[in-house]
Length: 420
Image 1 (cartoon, rainbow, N blue to C red):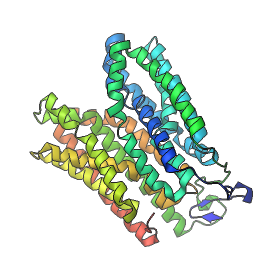
Image 2 (image 1 turned 90 degrees about the vertical axis):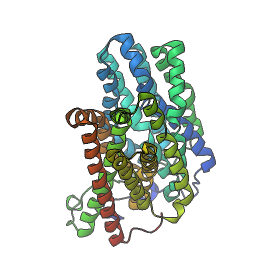
Image 3 (image 1 turned 30 degrees about the vertical axis):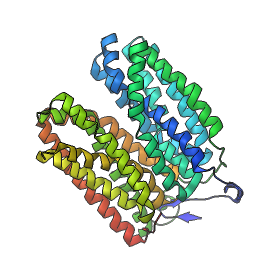
Image 4 (image 1 turned 120 degrees about the vertical axis):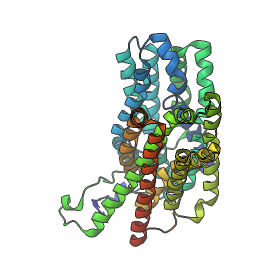
């Protein structure tokens, strides 16, 4: 069998057995939902609570303490293509279980680190766990299980994920206040071993193995002449990866610097924190609405709405719109449904056969940009102030809207906009 822009071969024995029936969503989604909350809360959101206690206790520079997360995200991006290929071949159960082991090892390393270099090395281990255990791996697992029916599952899972900080920030604060930051890391490591690992191993189904070659082999390298269809397919993949990466950059930058930007608007810290809290409910609310209406439209419209909402939110912040809450509601809604579009758009555009591998490749630039975004945001604020940083972000957000519209036109011309 041949697909546009790549060479794909599959033996009859490689196909999934005809009798295989995926498990019910009502069983799998709660399992993945709980594991996603704890995985995000003990890795990506960990330093929101632990960074200052770590710096105060050890005397390590706060920039290096926080920088561990950036290095972890960099490693997560590097391993993502291999993670996607592994999920494609073996299914998500083994890969997600492996992520729990790496996250536990990394957290134990943080807890036991006697010096800064070993602390940083522990974040590299955590990075492998994040690459194999956060949204992209979970989405790829759902795509492997349910094919095109995974759209509803992905949207449902993001509702759980939206509560990761809500659940784990207070939990982390409790652990730190009662036991100290090192024991907090050890408790999270134990949770991965005692809770997450058994859930992955015993609650997720064993999927049929595949040996389908889904590597991105350009047609010109496959012994045939490159065709316009192959070039178009490569362009579509590039655009999908680019618009997702830009969205990740904007959200990662604002998640770190939003309070600084609000305070630059002469908003007191307490008020800025209260306003920032609007973002979370806006994300969850937008995701719930998207779940209700998703059957009526193609995921390209989810992606388009997310980029427009983010651009409106950033634009309202930049012009100094007096009702700051309105700007944050638009921004929160945009990044909320962006999480859904990140998983559903590649599934609708590229299909289920190569979905896990494609997700791994799309995740790579996205995670690397997330790793760089906090430092890039700090540089923009230092160089041009909060207004200049917002202006630059608005320009990038508007470019992303244009890129998504261009992607829509290409998909429309290809006849690829049937409902997914």
